[in-house]
Every structure is written in structure tokens, then in C-alpha cells.
Amino acid sequence: MTAPAIRAEAARLLAHFTDRGAQPFETGILQPAETLLDLYGEDIRARAYTTQDPQRGEMMLRPDFTVPLVQWHMENGADPARYTYAGEVFRRQEDHPDRPAEYLQIGFEIFDRSDPAKADAEAFAIIRDALGPLTPSTGDLGVLTAAIDGLSTTQARKQALKRHIWRPARFRALLARYSEETPAKEVPATDAPLIGKRSAAEIEARHEALAEEARTPALTPQDRNTLDAILALRDTAPAALAALRHLARETSHLSPAADRLEARLEALLSFGVDPARLPFQTTFGRTLLEYYDGFVFGLSPGRGLQPVATGGRYDALTRLLGQGRALPAVGGVIRPDLALEAAQ
Image (cartoon, rainbow, N blue to C red):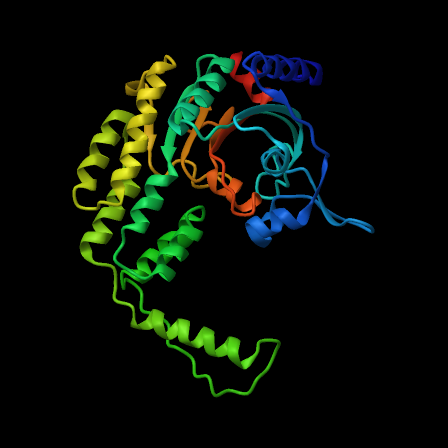
């Protein structure tokens, strides 16, 4: 695929979104590393190119547009608002050397607190319509979060599970430990000499946290069965909703998540999307960027193939970057090079 063809496809997609009311957004290729590190920790270093600037400190080549867009919008944007953007993003590909480290990304984002279900449906429909016939995938990370909130265990364990939703192997390991499938580690003594930078108070607090963890009972069989059922939920969207309603009879925390899914399916129908033709998998999107916390979707040439477009809801990100002031937001990104390949 030639560079001029990819640029032309990017221009077509950008026009598609501006025709639907999106305001063009631009941001620099060099982005401050501090915000991304605060959000994702040191894991981001494995996926981004970093450099040192003598005046601005550590910087990153732009890994995506969403974080700088949310930062700008929470300081300057109107409510509601919608944006589109186009430009290069950069990702290190040490584990996948055959994939490009630099590519064009086109995005469409909606900030609107009035009707999140409608915004979810509209973002999906507008991106789908821009690309033509592709295979959809959908999910909802909010369902998994709701299931974790409903567990009869400590807040510390719930927060640990939520923190590792996007790391399936670590999540399974924690779930096994909390179910006593693996023994808890012995709590170390606190009468050792002070070595290193941690104070005695910090060591004592850590010791107490470990002691509390050792005293915490295992997850109940009902809790584990419910969580396993949520993790295994994979069907058409209406069938998944019915299964979720059934599980909600035993776990009331799931009812609001089921209500959101039902409202979204009704909204999708109003945008000409047949929910019965949409696959739904609760865990879809767990390996995407960590800021997705609700509805997630992908569009690809076929099952198991690299997505042409991905997106989802990221309300929690607006709360973090808005210093506690949240604004419901949803959007998605497209690879124009992959869109051209899929159209051939």
C-alpha cells in the first residue's frame, strides 16, 4: 500500500467525521511522558519511544491522540462536543517486529453526558459506516467491573483485581490466590533492621496489609461461579443480555450493567445496527489500552484478524485528567492502511 493512497484514505475518513459535526483536533508529536507514566506506570515504556528534553524533561513520541485530546477538552472544551484527528502515532514493536512502529491513526470522539447509550451507539455506527462491511466485535468492561464490585471480599482485593483487568494472566493468578487455589505467602516479620529507603511506618503499614490479606477468607463458591460465568460470557448481544439478567438475580451489582447494555442495544437499533448480528464477549478489549472502562468494540476483516478499528468508552480517564470532574466520553480509532487492505 503506497503512502499517497494511505494519505488519501485518511483524508476521506477525516471528511466523513467532520461531515458529522466533528471538530478537527491537532496536537504535537512530542508529548510529556509524565502524564502517561502516571496513568499506566512503567509498562508504557515497553510500548513507547522516549527521549529527554533539557527544558521539558522526559518526552514521548505520540503513542495515541486520546490522552492529549482529553487533557485539552477537560480544560477548554464545550459540552457536548465531538472531535476528529489524523496523524502519525508511534509504538515500539519488540515482540512483533513485522508490525510498523509508525503509522497513521484517524479518530472520532464524542463527549456528551446527556445519553451515554446513544453516544456509544452513534460512535460505533459512524465508524462502522466509514469503513463498509467488516466483522464486528463488542464487549463491555463495565460488566466485569460490576462483577468484581459484587464480590464478598475486601476492597483491597477488589481494587487489585480491577487494576489487573487488562493483564489477563495476572488477573487469573490473583483470582486463583483469592480462591485458595494457591497458598498465601507467609507474612514476614517486622523486627528486621532498617535497610533501604522505606521508613519504619511504611514497613509497618505494609506488614499490616499483608497480615490482613492473610486473614481474608477465600472467595465463596457462588462468587467464583458468578465471576467465572461473566468471564466466559460469549454470545450474540441479545443473548448475552439475557444471560446477564439471569446472573443479576443472584448478584444485584450486575443489574445497572445489564440496564446499560440494554439501553445501548436499543440505541444501536435506532442507528440501523441490528444487535442480533453483533457478537458480544465480556472480556473483549482486555488487552487494549487501559483507559477503556465500559463499552468496547472492534471491526476487522474476519475473526482472529488484526482490527481495522477499535474503540470504546473511557469515562474514568476524563475523571483522572479532569482532576475529579468527569465527563462521559466514547470514541474509536482507525488504521487507514488496514482499511485499504480490507477493502481489496
